[in-house]
Length: 202
Image (tube, rainbow, N blue to C red):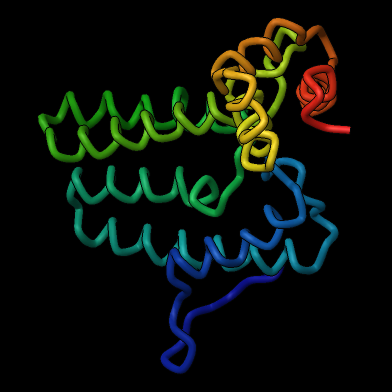
């Protein structure tokens, strides 16, 4: 793995640089950092930037010797890749309900209320992202959130006006699509089929 040594001319990377370095992989469709191809030179560079940032930040925390600073860094380190956009539900669950829950307990035990609130807020944010992730639910059926997204995209078209003419509420349309969803069904196919049946699409 490449190593990046900070110098006076080239200081240690910032957290934002770490986030930016990993965003390109999210844009390629990689949702879990565990799926990054380690033989990719760009991945090696991104990991080197991450390591350099972690080392520099850890050094500052050790100098500070503050439990609050230590927890702040732990929170920042644990969520740097989620801030880059990695959204795999299992990964988000691990970050929120494994790593951060331990930090929350430590903050509460130390009486660091403000830090505990920050950690809890981040856990809540990740849980919302995990639930709203457009992956299929564990039972094989699409999540309600995924159905809503697809239906909303369809209803942004001229079909919405047609629904109003038929006095069919968009919410009824949504519920009709949900009712027809079976395992492994394609949401958009169901939604479009419904609109064709109603004569709103050809």
